[in-house]
Length: 420
Ligand SMILES: *Cc1c(COP(=O)(O)O)cnc(C)c1O
Image 1 (cartoon, helix red, strand yellow):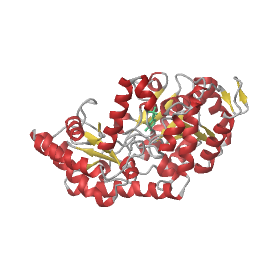
Image 2 (tube, rainbow, N blue to C red):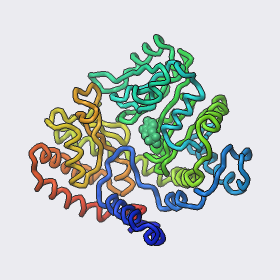
Image 3 (spheres, protein in one colour):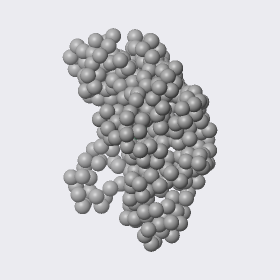
Image 4 (cartoon, rainbow, N blue to C red):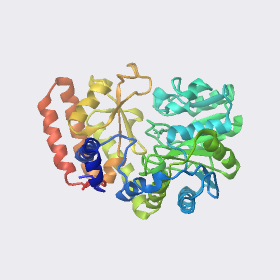
């Protein structure tokens, strides 16, 4: 059952209640390897389901446009102070609705329409909002994109430097959605300094690893840090912008009134709760365990002949190129989902297939580590992934059903917050 329980919802709207209940059971019953997903604590769920959703609070602490902020101000102040303390930044804004609007606010703060901006190309592991063509950020700005090296799969910092020198972007984004390796923030900072660009570290995927000391921090290198709060950081759906004091006022003005109206106070409270959780010693252990699990899973996959982009991982994320397995990412992901192993199909660098039917799958260990799986489980997982990918190519439903049963048995032993 969903936890907290939903008795009122079950009476008021049985259709929605039963779908929410079924989703809780589905989440509990599968192995969640989607790299951007996690499970929030019941405390975070309670805060995000609270009456704070009723309140409008346009403006900032002590400077609001609506009355009745006696308790909202201290809630937002706790979130801001905890973000500043956890990441060691001079300024934090916890109001962006999600990662994409947070990035839009960054552009609004530091670029004009038509200005040159620079980011990692989407098919190379970047995010849509780093200037990809279909995104507003690629349509309203002159976006130039760097990539990764064909031989190593890693970001080519020489290419980044050459491109930055030639194009003189106003804003440079580093970070992305399918980068299995450590981001070299000092090197990006040197390039940004040379061309007088604002360096933005988008740490949406790795914020929890940074908070837990399992990935180097961009603080002191990137003037602006953008992050979601719901990936490795294990908070509610939301985002934060952090910066040095110099860039603070421009960011605040861009978020409100530049881009948004009232902040989502229930989300702000849940972010505060998640940040408190992330500042504990057990979260540091969690972050280290996420990386240890990813390393162990990567090794076990390599042993089974999988071709990993960059050959392995430094963080929570693994990108597999299935070309040598003679199957596309989409049929593989669908077969794995049928077997109770949830992940997503994903383009790999220099992909020869189409974006809707790419060559890769992307995995992450943030959620399974929250669930309590350890490095000892990773060879088992790699074996199931191998079996199902082979079965998918051979139309072997018996194997998929066998793995589905084994997955059900395994996850039954690992409680999920939000489900009792
Ligand atoms: C997830 C992600 C985002 C966008 O976050 P949403 O909350 O989905 O809008 C932005 N940048 C990066 C690098 C991401 O991984």
